[in-house]
Length: 284
Image 1: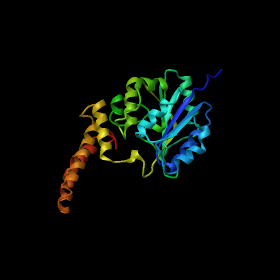
Image 2: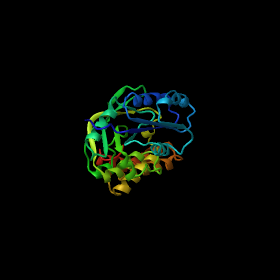
Image 3: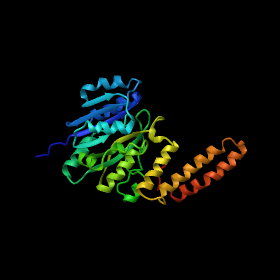
Image 4: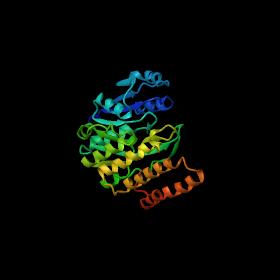
């Protein structure tokens, strides 16, 4: 006889994403997975998200719409409300591929030693059209690789509750790269299991936080590599040159335009050299 299907808990953090939220919800519910807990943690949206959530409320295990401390807080509190054997989260502008939950459940059932599964994914545009595969995903990698460059598509990753409890929740001192930081901690404790299946979709849209080039994101990226790798590792060096260039350009702004152009070129040289030297070994 087949083993009972594991209970899967999926959390969606959301804030003012009404344009995409319904597609995310439908991609979860249309999995038709028989043992699903679906939790939506909305941060008090004012754009019509609440009305969308309420339309699907009868299919949700838990939902709330109230002010929170941000995305990490929403995800951590969502998992605290869950009871599933398998966990994952899907952001409110991303989607799952059809059959994703059935595939990962079968692998977890048949491989009790596996603690984390990840697969492939698609970049999709604002309208849900596929753009290209997420080629940064790697089927295998050493630990030093993941401390310099994230090879996991979070939308296509799932793990056992026991691993979450062992590793601990997402680190709320990070705002941009908290998923990467958690995967690094998890990778220290367990082997990741790759499946060559398309499981999730990563939406490219103007307001997507993960597309930001905010200097604070660069600081977080450098911090991760220094903390889990070393100061001389490729990603740390590249991000440091980007940070230095940013502040140099900022200091040049009061100067005449002709001078700022020349000084800006000089300030970009270390960054250009580092990116060329470490091509493919750092976070873009």
